Amino acid sequence: LSRIGVIIKLAIDENGNRIEAQKENKGYCPLCNEQLIAACGSIYSNYWRHKNNNCDIWHQNETEWHICWKNSFPVEWQEVVIIKDGKRHFADIKTEKGIIIEFQNSPIIIQTIREREVFYEQMVWVINGK
Image (cartoon, rainbow, N blue to C red; front, side):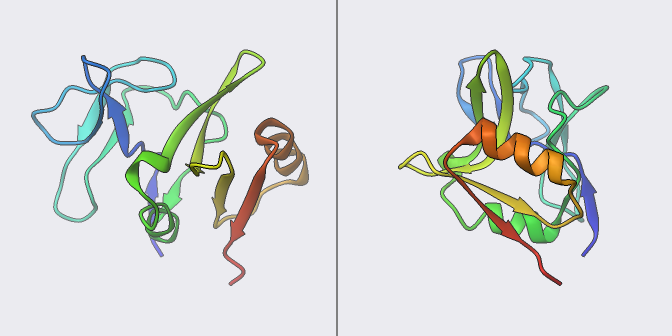
């Protein structure tokens, strides 16, 4: 599967609503409040990207596999900002019961796995074992 890059599916508009990327939309990052760029083309689904840098060190390049998994859940569960001890991260999925689901399609070091598990507390991993 091809890599799409570091993307944000849902930005925040000027009224605080979560919105998907469209050329006419103006969106802001839910994590850092930076204005985002709407990437709208014919190859991939529309998405948002930062002008400069990604603000969440855990938010990595996503493949079609990752995006398909996220899209299997209600949009209000996707890319939820979790705040704990002054730190902010995007959870791939946060269920209505508060369980975090993280999708992992690429290699990840054990230290990062442990950091995420401590931060999110109640979480499960969905890992592409291919």
